[in-house]
Image (cartoon, rainbow, N blue to C red; front, side, top):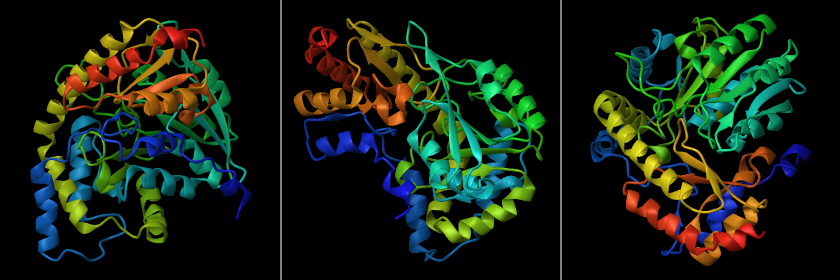
Length: 393
């Protein structure tokens, strides 16, 4: 076994979840997914594909009709994107991995904005790259901020890839347009690739620009087709398709052919029946995504207000994604606290340490719930856990 694999930490989120799985009394908010099933009509499209016998391989880069549908969808949100810049992958995490396989050699330097979903920084480490972490920092109210000058100073001509996840999991922090422009200009000067994880782009809570759909700022709004930029998307979040494992990426056309070769050696291709469901989901997006955005905004407002009313809790409304990131005064061991909340109070939250040392002392709460009453019940359980006791450490 390679030492880097032996030393690879297991998921702390899974560790907490495993302690509560199978318990009907647990309110689970630990995973990054809604408790709402994929819409029935999307599921029926996949069933029809299976019944039609579409159980064979497809093109490594995805069905042409899905690539075209993705290009049309992204072009409606950003600058025009051609299908020749799109690759379909078996999940967003697969898109991230094949991109880094294409770009990184052992010993290469990667700069990552953290705290962040652990897969994003584990992947370059698995490939033998060196990860340099640039931390977001919370203000007194719990809102996380980027020191743009610090990040720009960290990205040098030695930096092969800059990893950015915005809107961010777990903090909800979102890059501004001005920050994106500064980073893109700087990475053009240094020759650095930007790998932008934008799977939460439609889960944004800022008001949209006039005449545009609600969407977080994207590098696709400002970049040229041949810029050293790869933007990763997923059907998991805004299409309620986490278990389908369907993702995609937008990259320069010259890179797409090589990514197709890598996909052959990873997953070969996404299942055809899953891709058919993806085509249909994209066609329904003008109706389904705004409804989801409205519901999650309501969930965010309910949860954050209830948490802010508790003594000793620090939390700010997230700008995007589907999480509240909170801190309880006097609690510095997030894994121990998360374990206690599951075992003693039936409340399942993700420990902040799962997202790197920068998240230690914090808890992530997935707010994507069909019923806001379920969120209020969770807050009641947190209150019943005894914040006064927690506050004494």
